[in-house]
Image 1 (tube, rainbow, N blue to C red):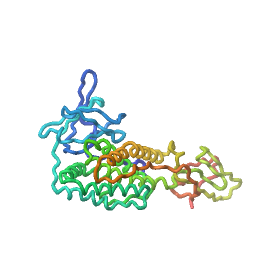
Image 2: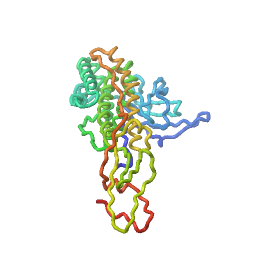
Image 3: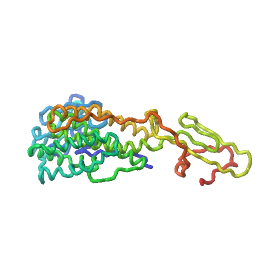
Image 4: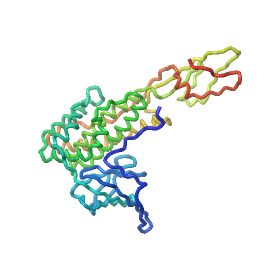
Length: 376
């Protein structure tokens, strides 16, 4: 079992804050960092603790821009060609975060035709299986809408979409399962991937919402990314939610230790010196809404992921979809997506005690004449 859940956190660029220096301006320390090289139309991510606001005003080469929160400790912006300087340093100033970051900007240039560049993404969409997933009809309708929209784009618009895709190819490949990696079925692996797709749904969803007006071509591409990530999140988070992971009781012989009622101890009485075999079993159930404040780390992470996804669906992705329905030609009229629902109640099942479970239990033996020897 993993002691730590891994987070996939490589979008386009992550700035680490142990590099760089700081300067003192009137008593307020401002960090001056080297952000390295970025490309036009790249989503640049800045990582910093205590990101409390949804947006931050910033200045890039003297141009006012807005940074958008895409995760708990990350904000991002898109480097558009009209604000970039080539052959010299670019300066990003974020007063509210006391940050200044210098970048070198290169122009993103296609090495293949727009159609060839986009083909891996198109192939991925064509291979998305929606028939067995919750909200599959809506997901498929969105994919069909995207394909209709893409096929009717002008050559210039396809060029823009392909440039954005190429500039952020790592984001798309790593978060959308484009390489064909199978979705895991084990409990902990499914939670790991649930977090991955939660993050991707959030990043794509935010980018889709904030760019729907000024850059609808990029917005719709990001929405497609958000929808596929959402579909994968439904599956992987659902795999975790369906497993019997919540312990409700431990039964030893006829004694029952009720963990959900916070019973702290139970006892088994021996009245002779004869070896006695004690049968153990566990009561286990799937998570339900009553577990939202559970102190089990895995269950807590699960509910955090579901809350993040639902917030993005309600406040970002669905907002973008409403805009497309009203303003984008060749885009089918589709309904907003529903949030992910958690069962209100789940039933405990009695399970045999495995050796791994036994080893994780603790026992208090008040008599030196009693020993625990083996697990059969």
